[in-house]
Length: 285
Length: 346
Image (cartoon, rainbow over all chains, first blue to last red; front, side, top):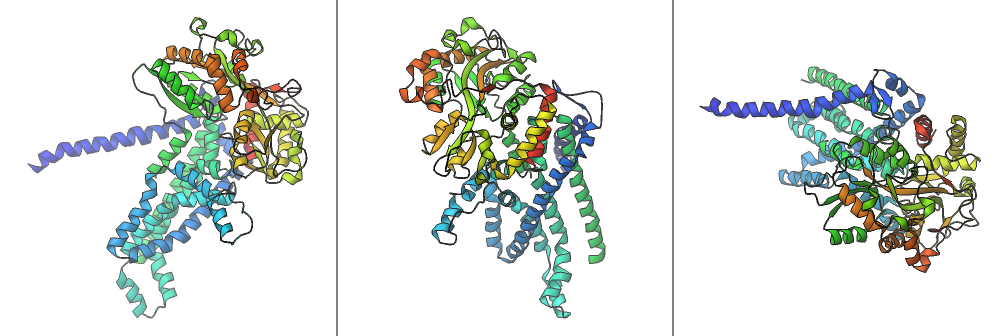
């Protein structure tokens, strides 16, 4: 009886999942790959013959530099997220269950507002006559307004603000699984606090750290509206290059190729993550 | 993750308001802050047609969207600038405008119709025209600023704003060197790029969304601005001045066009006629500060507006002025490459 009622449900779920993957994941990605090997066409955006020109263009030192600068800003974002997120997640796993639910809820609440709107709000805070400068000036901390908006720093602040939860949540889940008896065992065996941290806590939370890095680093290179709004359309990310190629320069093959570069970078990170996870698995237990 | 991706999509504006299936909807695709809400409300009141208003901040974005959404007929009316009218006309993206359904066309300035971009105005009806010139916040800037070349002055380091418009920024670079702002010569474009790189350390931000804002926010003191934005900005910031640079101002004319697959061309024609009424044209010009090509409306303008040199330049202001023209795809690629180099700061 049970299997009879379950079977259609299972089929429906499978169709839904596979349909979703096929039409909304595989097809668009194939289209992007397809576009990247076509020839640029001013009239209809892309046309035959097939060519690797777009990938050759990626090797142009100009775009290499944009990519490196973008990587640098994304890496800084990830580092700041890690520095804030790690102790945050640790503390989160230590507070009582009821507070935990509340704190995680508060962490999620900003997502109810569109990130574009939140970025504009950040602009009001960072502006020369914005909240932060006015506040600090009235407290007498600074004499004149600091130039915060339209700088590299503003872009990184914006990216950290948007992406921090993606660092905290995977870290929180590994800290949740961190067993007290390991720490006690380490202590009983004569390790100090620092030594326990380095030899026990860090290795055990490493998968969470890597997952957090993956969730922050790559998206940070794609959020083009953050440099547009907070960076004064300077300090470009790879996402800006992709957007400009599609909308302004109308070079779709190149935009698609740049997008694939990001996808490959992501795949590489996931691969590294898997490898490290396996190694930790072998050494750890 | 999905949420962020979604937000990203929203940022490009792929929301594509296709509207409801009811015929009583006009999908208007226009520049941001380029039509007073009052005009839309009055149009709806008079005709019962709801206006779905979507905006863009560059011709390039508008063109890409129209071209992509051609089949889905997402828009009934758009407002491309000068050279994009000829480009879209030649690429067969536009529907001819039925002049018998347009009232008030004769009110338009004879100098602004039957231009090369659309010789018989078969596809376009002028909406507003304007200029891109210098903005100076006189409260923070000492001494005169009279030319584009003044932006290169060291005292403005970190205080300059440029529009986020490839053609306009290069126009400035080219004019400072004495070339045409519509140059297609790769050599000249490269020289303009070299010249502009010297300006980059001074540039605080690029903005084509609302170019007056960085001046009002106190982030920049001098730079480029559209004349209407300067007029609107002056309401809040008295010291904001609009200057016609010696090398010549950048001029443009924005026109209504009906995309080929428009779902409701009838409403589009109605809307054009509605705007061509002298009273409505005058209201628009007074409200958003750009010049109306509607001569009958010029007579109705408030004296303060009609005599405002920022909105209505006199003959000497327009010396050396240059209208933007279509430079063709090849030159566009050259510009695009240098533009990216410029903005990535090399």
